[in-house]
Image (cartoon, rainbow, N blue to C red):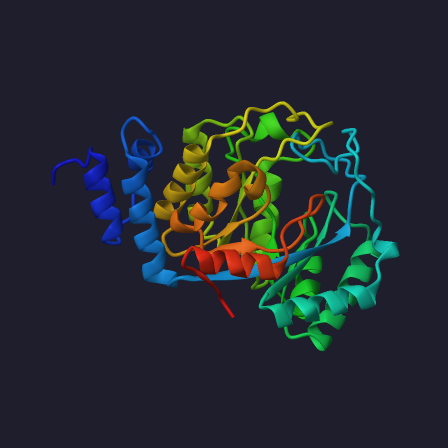
Length: 329
């Protein structure tokens, strides 16, 4: 069998469900070797063949904000950065507000809801409070429950599964080779360990990262293949929004074509996985934001993010309909 070398041959192979290799992905990620239109068309065809034109929606609630001891270069919540955010403590949470918020989101069409906390690990007191809130959510709402609480122990993972958490979120952030440029207070393998623990107790995995932090295109491919090897169920793709006061405040943004090309290559590497548009998409893509859904995206983080605001659910649903998609109920 002749070696596959051209972009057309690779795309033909991908559209017939035969997957792509790392070397082939390097050809597709290179704008000098592969046209963006052809790449996006193939990615869109693969996405629609698996997921149709429905876009699933999830939402998050910031249950702890700021005061993180980590040094992640992108993050406004690090205590090592000087960013204008208002800390939120777990002890100050309003349980009734959280329950009400979850029920309102369900009525608007959002089907998954996650409590998200800053920091590498919750204290026992904080974890017990979060566990109690999740228990109430499982009893008092219909919405699917996710959690994003930092690193896990087997005991904590078992308790989360026991109160109805079906999916755990924990990003690897970037490729293994680039990770040391982003964080030194915990390791890439620490991330993998938490993912393995969550999978061990039967939770699905939500894990992705952030592009545009200074990594090379090949390192984006490296991250995508790592997610493939981990058999991640849902892959959030964030685009760096450089925040004043962080180490990446002056990072050069990617242009629209680079972002769409990255999304499309992720789709070809992960043809049957959920690709979720997460933070940074509005600022990075502007008027081209909804082109992402024609490049391979089939899910979105709707509403507000951790330290920045987003559009309303109704705005998102309307905008999706304008470009030929619909929110999945």
